[in-house]
Length: 247
Image (tube, rainbow, N blue to C red; front, side):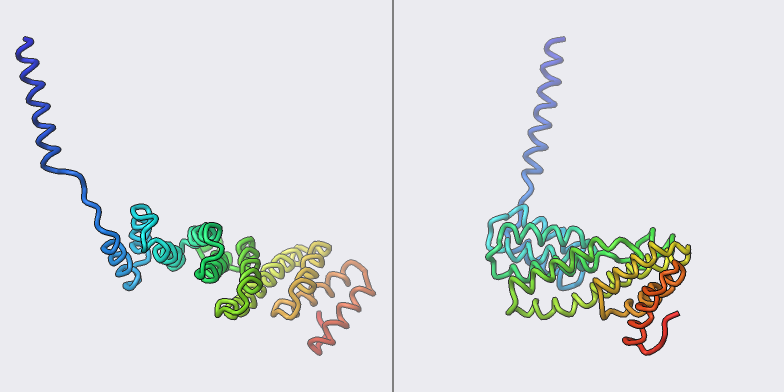
């Protein structure tokens, strides 16, 4: 019986050794090969595959000559793939680790536009028929802050000029969000809440497309609340800016 056990064990051991010798360790491609593959995916707009390949390159060669380029391309690939949270997170990590990098303005710009683009329609939005402007504006506020930082830290870069245009878009989005909330309260005739939210639009986001209707809601709300002087002031301000009495 002992002889049989020894023989069986020898067979199993020999099989394992042969299997190990035949397969061998998996060869890791050189950094330039991995970068070439990742860059090809980027060029072909295969954002998901590009993300995977750049991530593999970074994990395999974290301190190689392609590391910085791979990190920048990874955050861009995430952004283009619609994975805006991950793109912003990658950009934020890069900025913390490389505050003096010549690529810092680009990383901050990408962080900002990732936040600004985060409110894209998804499954729940289609189910409940909500629009971009009806959702929480947290990411939009983060985007606006990032754009402000970009203009302050790197005023002489092309990204600072682009930030100005994006800030107009984000301000309009935030104003529209607050207007939607004001309209919601107005439909329910909850005039105190409606006036408060409409005044947020007028005070914090003046000269946006939402301002005109916000003044109308303020005037309606003050009339409904019996605040005649405040209602007249809202009407006067509306007439001064738009020439037609708000209703």
